[in-house]
Image (tube, rainbow, N blue to C red; front, side, top):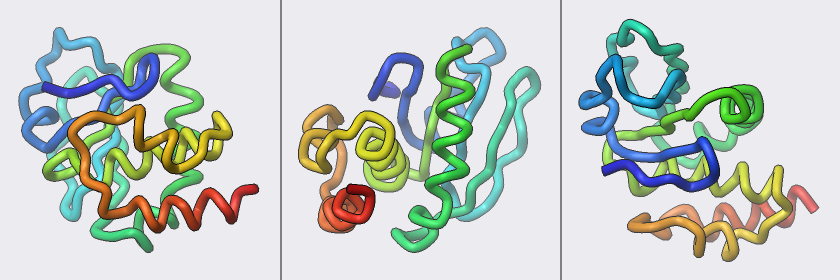
Length: 129
């Protein structure tokens, strides 16, 4: 099951995206996967190709703009292949950038995720101060 990171911002895996039905609450989906997935009718689908930290870091501003605009209107699902590394990293960077949280504070708000990008998120935190 997908998890809510912030009001209106959910994260999950490719399986969560595949399970999205037309009646689900998401109006927009951000896919952080290597290969674009077929769009689903009734959703605005944003494909932001990412495989590692450098890809993600380059996509932060675009992802933040989508989250700023969309999450105030309707729920957004951010997903990657497994749902434990890339999508949580983007959401944690969003928390650092938009809510002035530390990387560790952002990490503590997430459930069931990997800490693979935590050192990079700490560096990002220092870049944004």
